[in-house]
Length: 68
Image (tube, rainbow, N blue to C red):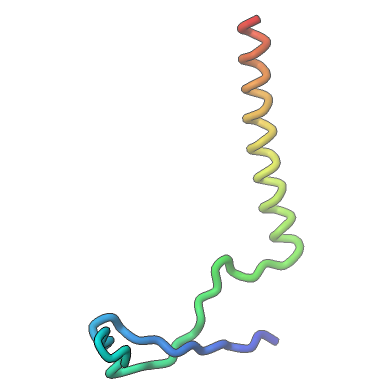
């Protein structure tokens, strides 16, 4: 079960830089980037990255062969 994490935030307009205080602090959910992935989703993303790299590598090798 995922536990929701809250963090204390302050809008720029509410922050007083001279005192370092926030006039109206508030709690909100902590952002999660990248979002949590299960093993299958991670494997799928990895396959796409490796596939794109392989295509680029083949194009590069093809250009080298055609130039020589």
